[in-house]
Image 1 (cartoon, helix red, strand yellow):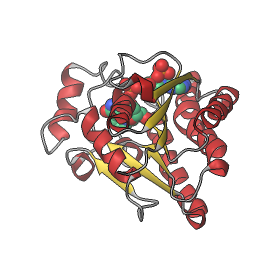
Image 2: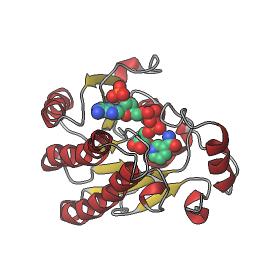
Image 3: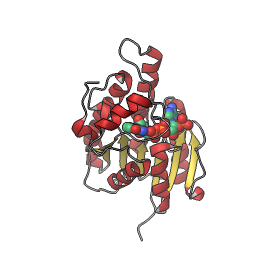
Image 4: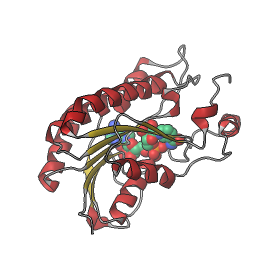
Amino acid sequence: MTEAKNWLVTGGSRGIGRAVVEQATARGDRVAVFARKPASAQWTHPDRVVEIHTDIADPDSLARGVDIVFERFGSLDVVVNAAGVHRGGRIGDLSRAHWDEVIGTNLSGAFELARNVAPRLDAGSAIINVGAVVGFRGFPGDVAYGAAKAGLHGLTQVLAVELAPRQIRVNLVIPGFVDTDMTSALTGRARERILAAIPMGRTGLPEEIAQVVVGVADSPYMTGSVVATDGGLMSSFSSRR
Ligand code: NAP
């Protein structure tokens, strides 16, 4: 039997992050969850989950949260950065406040997380950032979100190279369109257009993304990689909308 691992999953309270927590705990691992609010539902294995109410956009809150994780677990094997917010708006419409919120959470939050965990990670551990197709393809109305996710790609590559000599891996998993709270606001014609652009013709399930995150966490020679799990969206995405 393999030894149980210790995970930290930001944004683990619901959506994609939550599915990662459920899959990790199902195999006997322990998971610390960062989110501002309590989890959306009961855990299947509540004894293997520690919820730490943390705002990853606030560097002090995040640093405190990471300290608590290391006090509780002693060490971390896998760090998944799945926390994120989406605020839509084209260049003429997006407010500076929304820009700051999206960059502060999705990009600066990832930087602060890495800054706090990296010095304490051991050889063999892994960081997985959760990106987005719009970090690679121009999607109108995603000025802030697209910029943050593109930045996350750059951050992932630099961290992969900087941490590789210590045998710490850093990868980026790219979900396609997944039905979660984040995407629930997208309805009607906008949703139909996205669906029409997905070659597999359907949205993804949080569990399908989580399966890939777990696979990446377990891949000992993978670092700096971009792993899309998107029903083919990256291959077909057109910005003409
Ligand atoms: P979701 O259901 O809205 O969940 C977002 C999670 O992030 C929640 O746990 C939320 O908890 C947490 N979070 C947000 N702001 C936070 C903050 N400041 N501090 C701590 N936690 C925070 O979203 P999702 O769809 O699962 O998205 C998960 C990740 O996948 C995100 O990075 C998202 O950008 C990415 N993604 C999603 C899709 C999709 O189609 N759904 C596609 C591509 C990429 P609290 O609100 O309680 O803090």
